[in-house]
Image 1 (cartoon, rainbow, N blue to C red):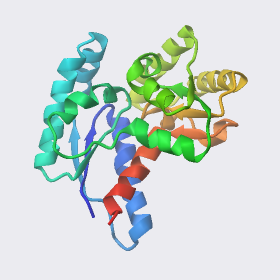
Image 2: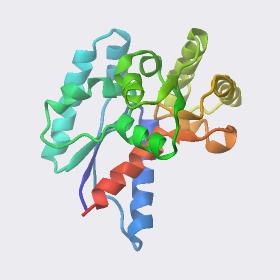
Image 3: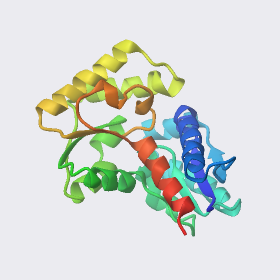
Image 4: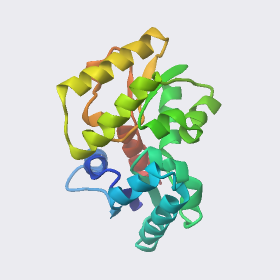
Length: 230
């Protein structure tokens, strides 16, 4: 079994989900008392979020790059960055490493293609929804991307940072997300990407009528596939 490096803490709420799901999936595959081999680095999200707000992406990439390097030195065979937004600085982080990074968007694209999705709604932080680093990867793969109107982008972003990152799951926020997803369906979306690792705490498949692509779950599954591959 290969050792998975988790670069987490962004937020720790979703990092818990990664740790839980990866171990559950390994045990489902191998049985007995088997669990995953994991090295975890959990950063102070306040420091990273400040870099986001102040547009200091290079600084955040340096912080995460050094943490990623420590994971490799500790024995990780490959790396997962347990957040969608900070994949913006993957090229910078990769400069600190000789091990591969399992990109969350690549994992999600593979899943979208397997389900023959031609147009997907993308929900996440305002950075993920509006900037090109993530969205363009999906578009370049031949899948159209729908994002909400500006006011809804702000609402979704606010719910993520003010509620989900603190473990607050509110019924009215779920309704807001469902309303936005229904707008996406009306616009022709065939699936919805939960493009922030906390959204799966709020929205599940039973809540909506189109396929839900939970990036945390997808990323975890791909990590286990790689860890257990011959």
